[in-house]
Length: 505
Image 1 (cartoon, rainbow, N blue to C red):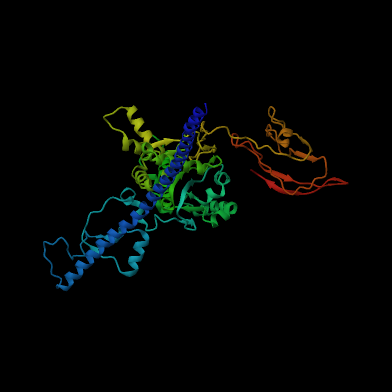
Image 2 (tube, one colour; image 1 turned 180 degrees about the vertical axis):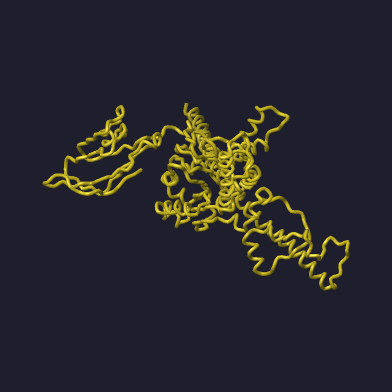
């Protein structure tokens, strides 16, 4: 029996050790795969930045080669074979300014040293100017007309938020606040938010920027939050657009401008981080969303079958929550520039991926399978659309992502004991008493001018601060308007005092 027992022990101990070791190695392998995927993403980001400098080096090399040939021609008395590929006829109208292909910083540097030479004609590939020729009318057309930036770069995630003027309500401050409040400090240190104010009216741009700075000044000063706006000349004449898809001219203007706005924002954000996330100015998210998205991206990158992903989709609505590798953004930017007048931006994204992987010789099922390898959905959704007033004039937008989950309509809280009274009649069971005790929210029927809501503390209470929140995400327009909040002391003559603060949200 003892020998049998020893045998069992000898068998069990190696098996146990083997299981423990294998388990540890598997965990280490997963961790290593995640680190390798993150390293790969960083390398792609750096390569995309390096590629711009490579282009500059190639152009400068060509420039110096031509300059040296001109110098040789001058030494030989200006005589060269008429059959030579290189000509010294710098005045030819067909010559191109080779330095125009340089990036802005390299162009500025070289022009400080010497003047640009008119050289022999060479092949020029299409650029944004071919698709948007109006940009040539103003040398500052691709420069922001407004910018607040600390020139921060090298983060993992850049969140792009375009915002435009709406008829009735702006959601941008609430959206930024929600994004920040759902990040911890480590996530904020590895993330940037770029707000793009897509309006030609500079006074309005400054007004929006001031509202954002007033609320989030420390985040702007730290480089976490940036604000930009395009030049007026960035946009073409919107009255000359072709009407496509049987849309009204107003709708064509709206979606064409949105395509150009996205292209500008993506181009600006591309050098700043490894990943780019497209958002809108009327959304909310969930706690820890940055870590969730980054881990999902690294997980998919580490797997061979999904490593070539093009878009990770964290919301089922429109273009909200679409994440890209920054190195891939030039594909999108160019595609949007080419077809900005033709289709909405979310349709263009679909057609671009369709073009990359779908074969005319195979059926729709095969196409869907191939697209799913590049366009990967994450569930449940991390973003929800909350705005009611669309940026398209007169359009009410009620779309909700059903995969986001239920949004809380109130936040439980505790208040000091008080007598609660009001002349405003409650809707169903949404009473003022339940709102005060933190059990629900108050939903009243048609408040009238002069109506009061009163809270009389049962014991003397020192009020240092208060929070009065009206409206919720499901009924954002059901809120208190033109309302004054008063804090009144009690004395022998009764209630006296003066308004503490007006309230209108």
